[in-house]
Length: 261
Image (cartoon, rainbow, N blue to C red):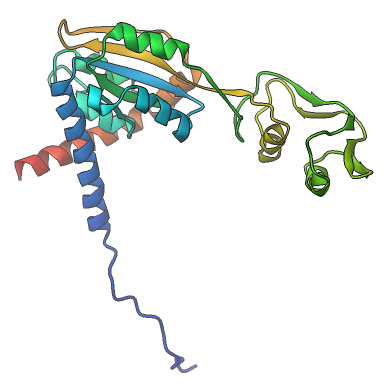
């Protein structure tokens, strides 16, 4: 069969894997340089663990610890942050920083500040902001909606509630639930539908909070570890140690080669 003579799409621009690799390397180098620059300026470093992280909630924390008061937050790939601090005593940027690297697993970030450790710990110990649980979250309580009229819902929402599994009907323009409905049970992993119902019925089951895992003091070079009993972090650590170590070694080699050039 002869080839079709119809116009064919021709890509003029080239997306080179090498260019993407170089861009990725530049971003890693930039993060490493920023962290090390702030290490030179700040007296305290904290590894912070985020729970139910939300961008808008994290902004509240940033406003409480602004850069104008020499407080800085870094959230990047854990292996790149480990590289910035140093994974071994021979490669650590400042004394004792290599002791922190093993704790950079899971949903963590770095906080560098000149604020006192007491101020930082007191703030995070009190920080708990209610929020709605999302799909994939574990819930720690059972939520049941009683039968009867559903005040606060417009009649136009009745089809939506039925589509989410509730047995409802309209009576004089008011939505009524025909029988009790369990949105979720203790221990459930939320589905998108359950998460949506919890928000519709205004049942916030999640809490945004930040806890300190590790504190490093530049003056005395001491490292203090706080036991948070994070099973998710331990599982992540067990499953990815070998892969992360190999990736870190590759990153370190590439960055060193680029510095030499």
